[in-house]
Image 1: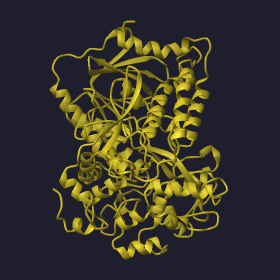
Image 2 (image 1 turned 135 degrees about the vertical axis):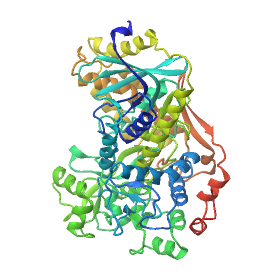
Image 3 (image 1 turned 180 degrees about the vertical axis):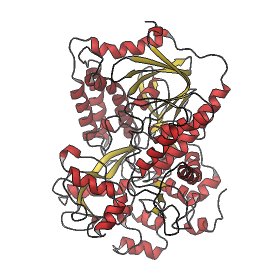
Length: 610
């Protein structure tokens, strides 16, 4: 096949994914004079950025002047159990305030304090009120602002276009083959650099807050092109997803409900989170030993409510209450803000949650508690990148946002995802521009490579019979929900890995009726090759990490082990298949380690770090 017969579009840089990270990266590229294109699997801005409702974590210090980038950095490292990439966490904490102010300059309308400053709310794992917000619709406001700014930058947007695989010229990225979902026609994007901003792979699980698009596309494409994945064992189960009715099970209930005063109750009406406060966490986060003691003793008036412990702790607590027979009628816990706040406050501060429950569950949250439970929400792991440039080990391939790994370590703090996508979206744009400026000579897309990608996709249409892709996807979800869930054992993970290996044979035989046009069965079948990479990577990494750290809980290896901080698990493609190995971590810079392990008194005295 000669790709001259295929539609070809040329850009200096192609951004894959049109959520907050992708649009922010594209804006940076366009401002540097590059011909920039964005492809989106669905519609521009139809991304999980919108789902991040609680706020953007940035140490503006508008509500508590003691906040600083150092305290934010310290919180992020401690929340991530010190497995974060130190440089990424530093860049994030330092640059987040500028990115929020930049958004404001571009037209974002934030909630305000009495003094007219951007308001900030409490959130789990954050020492001070740090989340700049717009009610409980912060992500929507970010997307609105970025889209508005983006369309005036001359950026080409290619919507409802799915990427299939990357094209390489030697070891360098030179293009991407995709297809238009509406017509099924193939398209070749010739480009000098590609920025992946494709989000996570939550649709590998049965109960997830993730939308249909989140099938690990960037992870799969990067892996097949030779890029490395990192920290894939750390999958975040958000503690509060809807559990009723079944049609909406898993849909996110923002942490902002708890940040604004909501409490968790079991079926006996007990505020059970006081029973699950880790002693170490209490001593690290309390202002004084006396406050830590009051907290651990169940003081209901403690300044920092236990509902705002890190997400891994809260999610496991809800699961334990359900297993103990103290769950809500539909297998979750009760989240009550109705008894804590006036109805007008709830409608003003949490309008999306009010309407979500009213419309989907016929519950008025100003009068009744919500039923919530853990839902697969976010990937801490992802594509391994250079902290400063966001470039992978494949020249010309960059990644940012949720599909990039390293920033959040073993557990992400709420609100850090929005500042992450802004900070690293910009840095990915900078990195791509610098890379393109350093290139010499022309890049080529070989007919052979393009034809191979297209043949693999059309083989599915050319079979007369085979496996149903929807049933295969359902089986993959069942495997991960059963064997690679919120708590894990080596035996279950090994069984899950065996089941996934067997499932590969079915994936190789899926078929869809022979018309590429308007063919959702074909779309589903094509997604499976990325879902299986994602599922296998998570399972292999989880099997190797023989400890419990952050969002990765092993019942057969309880607690954190000291040697767990000495390595990251890196996934890569080899001739014999997927490899997962422990890669030794470099020692942290002394000045950053001093900040991360410092007391609050030392940080507030500003005696540490640059």
